[in-house]
Image (cartoon, rainbow, N blue to C red; front, top):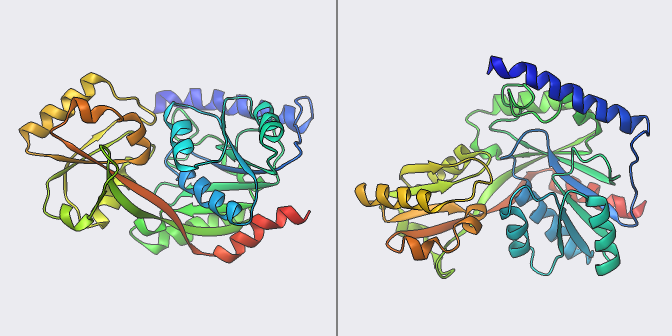
Amino acid sequence: MKLLIPFSFIYYLIISLRDFFYRSRIFKRHTLSAKVISVGNLTWGGTGKTPAILFILDRLLQRDKKVAILIRGYGKDEPRLLSDLAKGVPVFSGSDRVRNGREAIIQHSVDTLLLDDGFQYRRLERDLDIVCIDSTNPFGNGFLIPAGIMREGLNSIKKADIFLITKVDLISGQGSLQNLEARLKEINPGALIVKAIHKVGHIYKLSDGQLVDIGHLKDKNLGLVSAIGNPRSFEKTVSMLGLRFGKHFMFRDHYWYTEKDLKRIKDYCATHEIDTILTTEKDAVRLQGSKDRIPQIGILVVTIKLQVIENEQSFHDRLFRIYST
């Protein structure tokens, strides 16, 4: 890790210079004729942005807002997943989210743009900045990438409007959560702090979408497959359901599974008498078709919903306040 610190310093200089250019208006920031709500994070992956996007989207649609989602699209999985989960809502994928936002307004007459992974995207002005923070690993080792998982320094959160602290049920003690809140308030006392958990919605078969009773899995020797930002939180979620797993096949975030990977999973499961695998909704997109290549293994998908457990009404009030200005 020490060998990577100089590269983290170079990265810090680059983003600092970029921010200076935007503050000095050397680089232009664009304003669009729709409300822009950014949902982002300070660290690399695993903070729960997708469940947060869907939670916010549901609230907006309940108020009859016409919404489009603008996504950077780091991999093929995220655009496809959001398109599947946000039925009827246009999803625009690409690095130029100013252009995509204009197209969404013209083509679909939307009044709201949900900017996925938008905290570091400076080109587009926003009406609300929501920063998701994983309570189980809020800032990693404190270093910027590549030595750590931080995408910006902590001072950058001074411009956040809402801190959405996720997975608060997965941390062992409340002391660390209180310390995290105190640190956030010290840096940005004006931001609203909201706490949330990731609640299991249901489990279904990848092969045909049929729902599965969790009780039927209690005595099974399960395996896990994931390529997400925080695989340990997936393990904790499964364990909290009272389920046992013998092996977790972990891959890097956004990884797209190969035939070789599937064969390794198949061979290991055959040797260790594992006939059922649990995976995430993001991974389900990447595993489509695998049921034909490893038919003897049942692949079950665990769906996750974000549930706000503290300051929900304040969150709603702050969210819809942007429409009265």
